Every structure is written in structure tokens, then in C-alpha cells.
Amino acid sequence: MGSIEAVLDLEKIRADISRLEEEAAAPNLWDDVASAQKVTSRLSFLQAELRRVLNLRSRIDDVRVLFELAEEMADADTRVEAEAELSATKKVVEELEVRTLLSGEYDAREALVNIRAEAGGVDAADFAEQLMRMYLRWAERHGYPTEVYDTSYAEEAGIKSATFTVKSPYAYGTLSVEQGTHRLVRISPFDNQGRRQTSFAGVEVLPVVEQSDHVTIDEGELRVDVYRASGPGGQGVNTTDSAVRITHLPTGIVVSCQNERSQIQNKASAMNVLQSKLLERRRQEEKAMMDALKDGGSSWGNQMRSYVLHPYQMVKDLRTEYEVGNPQSVLDGDIDGFIEAGIRWRKQRETAE
Image 1 (tube, one colour):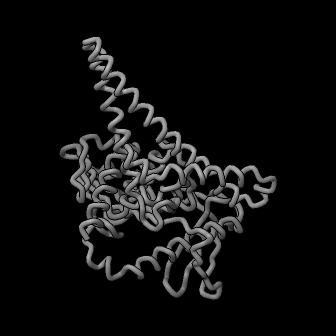
Image 2: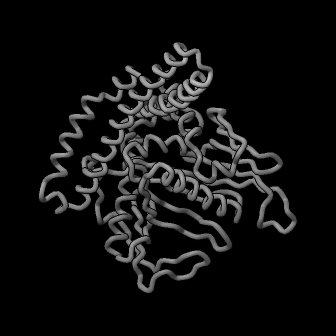
Image 3: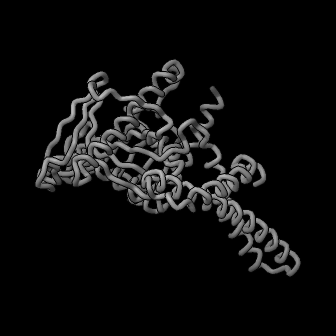
């Protein structure tokens, strides 16, 4: 526990909380809404982190006392209670230990997640929508705010693609191990003959761009198209051309946003997504030689997890070998075990290299 506290640097956390409390108390804080939200979000996160560590320290002390009582009283029931609490406390320590492994350049950032249907037709589109729901449910379980920027619906069912943010510190470092190609094997509900179908969906995770990143975009290198937002089945969800699609001509990167009623707001959100994609592109270029030496699981297009619903029930990570026998629980957002295993696996690879 002492080593975890040292890595987390509780004194720095306390100092940051003090500084942020002063900023939050400023009378003109909300003159800049975006900045104010960052200050209050960061303050809330750090306060929760400090409480989490202090509560865990107290909990460890309580477990020690329980074991001492059980020994003094020779009480089997107290001993069972102490062992159960010890097991639960160990799990919390392991979760906190995983957090200390998030030390990458952008790990502390919020996350921008893009999901797209790949091979598999309507089943792939349906699977992509299931993955989107899985991540949104995971965020909801943890109390992390999310915002959906854009959803492109498929004609028959599911989605072609979707982009959303997870607005919590360290969301990028946490979810970045989810990047890659996910595979679903099941009896297709869209096949009249009830045949088994394998389909694929891709997950891309990017760090949300910040003002300090200096991602310069020349307006002359952009093509901006506006159109009417649509919902499932192609039905219109707006009566004006408020949705925005931006194409970055030098790279061919295309982003879109249709969640806001205002064209101006949608363009601002789309620009944020474009900046994140360009930041990631720059980061990948800077580390191109290093990335070329790495294999599997770390880039878009690499198969990293299988969800098997037939002929047996299993979800297995192909990098870490972590697996569970309850796919429905996983698709309902219970993915912490996979994420923790992925973060440990990544750290081991980095250490080995």
C-alpha cells in the first residue's frame, strides 16, 4: 500500500486539490464554461482519488484489527468475516495498483472513442451497436459522463459508425487497451436459415485534445459539408441542415457531428474530433519506428477479442488470455477485468522492450 501511495504522490494530489479549490472559488470562473468544467471535473476526480486512498488505508487497518480480534477470541465467525473483508480489500488494492500503471504521455486525458462496423454485413452493424452500448454502460457504471458526437445508422439494423467521448480523467489511458478489432460469433438473428455468422467491429480510442497540444489546422485545407441529421432507418431527426461533415484534405480524414441542434456547435465538436485524430496521427508518426517493432493488439485493425455466443458461451482476450463465460454480462458493460488485464499486459510489454 505504501508503494501505491508513493506512486500516486498524495502530497501532490493534496496540493493540486488546494490549487483547484482556489480556482473553483474565483467569481469569474464560469465566464469560460469549457475551462470551468475542466477545473470542476479535475477537482472532483482528485478529491475522489484522495478519498479512495484514505478509505483504503482505513479499511486495511480495520482488517488487521478483525484478524487480531478473531485470534484473541478464538472466534471462527469473526475469522470468516476477516478473511472475506481481506479478499475484498485485496481486489480494491489491485484496482488501485492498475491505476498507477497509467503513466503514458496522454493517459490522464479524457477519451474519444470511435466504433465502426467491419466485415459481416448487418451482423457487423448490429455488433458495432452492441459495442457502443457496452462502453456507454461501462462508463455509466463508473459514473463517467459521456457525450455522443455522431451516429451513422445502418439501413437494416445497428450502426455503421459512432463517435463519443468519455469525460473522465484517465479515460484514455484506461480505454486505450480496448483499441483493435473485436470479433463476434453467433447464430445470426438476421439469417432465415439460422446459420452461424462471424462478424467484426473496430474500436479506435484517442486522447481528447487540449489547448496545450498546439494542433494547427489551416481552414483552407478543410472541406465542410452540411446536411440534415438522420436517425435509425434513415428517418430525419431535424428539419434543418445542422449536421456537419469536415474533410481534412491533406490526410483524407473525415469527421462528422450531428448531436447538436446548432450547425455552429456541431462544427466545433467536429473540429475537436479532427484535432484528436490529427494529434494521434502525429503521435504515431513520431513513434513509427517503435510501433513497427510491436505486434498485435495495439493498433486499429488488429484482432484482440472474441465474443462467442454459439456453440458455447465465452469472451476471450486474444492478447492477455483473460476470459469469462458470461458474454451477456460483458456486453452489459462488465469489462473491468479485461481492461485491467490489458493494462498489465501493456505495461509488461513496455518493460520488456
